[in-house]
Length: 331
Ligand SMILES: Cc1cc2nc3c(=O)[nH]c(=O)nc-3n(C[C@H](O)[C@H](O)[C@H](O)COP(=O)(O)OP(=O)(O)OC[C@H]3O[C@@H](n4cnc5c(N)ncnc54)[C@H](O)[C@@H]3O)c2cc1C
Image (cartoon, rainbow, N blue to C red; front, side):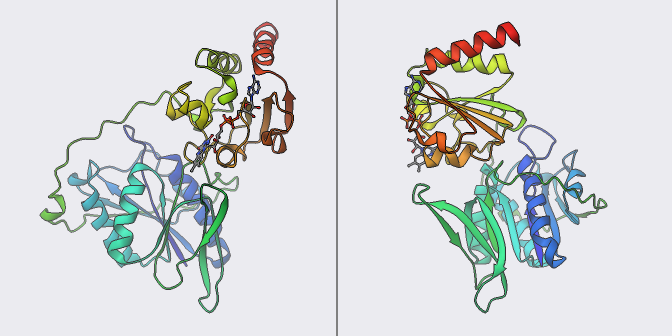
C-alpha cells in the first residue's frame, strides 16, 4: 500500500505547515502494518528549510516538482502537477491538509482523476470492506456535528481525504528514515497559467494555538467585550493564548481567528481553561483532546463538566479575578 501526502509550507515562511508533519506521522502509522510506503509531493520553487523533519515522522520519499511558475500558488498548474504525480506513483490514498490551499487543490484533483474526496476527516482507519480488501475509512462529523459519518471510496482510486491542522497528533514514536528527495521539472503547458495570478498577502495572525501550552477560552457567559479583558488578563498571567467559543465570536467579544471548535481551530494544549462555555458538541470537537481541561461555569449541569478534569462552579466574574490576583501575587 502507498499513501501520498500533499506537503505545504506556512504562508510567508520557508517552513513546513504542522499539518504536513501530522499527516506524515498518521500515514506512517496507517501504513506500518502493511509495510506500506509514505510518499510526499511538494510543488514549488524551493523546498521548505525543515523538509528533513518529514523523514523523522516516517516519510520514505519526497517528490519535489519545481518550476519558477510554481513559486506562487497557481491552482490550475498545481492541480495538473499533482495529477501527473498520482498517475505516475499510483498511491492508494492521498491526504491533504484542510488548509486554504488543500481545500482548493484537493477537489480539483479529485474531479480530474474521477475519485471521491472526504473533507475535514477527524479519524482515518484502514480495515476490510466487503470484498474490496483493505480500504480507508474516512470519518468526520456530519449534520452539524451531531453524528459521526464513516465514508468509504470502494470503487475508485486513490482514496482522498483532507484533515484540518491539529486534528492528528504528532506521533511520539519517530521513524528517522533517511532523507530521500526526488526532483522533477514538471511538463508545463501555457494554458495551465491562463488564470491571472494576482497575489496572496498572508495575513499576519496574532493567534498561534500550535505553540501554546495553555489556552484560556471565553464563551457567551463572559457577557461582554469589556468582561473579555478578564480572559486576556488570566491568559497573560499564565503565559497562555486566548481562545473563544463561536457564541463569544458571534457576540463580537473577540475576533473570529480565536474561535475553537468544529468551524474554528482544533487545539490540543496541556491545559485548556473554559470560562463561561457550555460545552456544545461543536466546541468540544475543537478542544476535548486537551491534556487537562478546567471548566468554570455557574451552571453545575453544564455539559462542559462531563469532559472537564477539574470543574469550578461559580460566577467567572468573581472566580477569574481571584485567579489573576493569586497568579500575580504568588506566581
Ligand atoms: C455547524 C455548526 C458549527 C459550529 N461550530 C462551532 C465552533 O467551531 N465552536 C464553537 O464554540 N461553537 C460552534 N458552534 C456553536 C455551538 O453549537 C454553540 O452554540 C456554542 O459553542 C455555544 O457557545 P458558548 O458555550 O459560549 O455559549 P452558551 O451555550 O450560551 O453557554 C454559555 C455558558 O456560560 C455559562 N455562564 C453564563 N454566565 C456565566 C458566568 N457569569 N460565570 C460562569 N459561567 C457563566 C452558562 O451557564 C453557559 O453554560 C457551531 C454550531 C453549528 C451548528
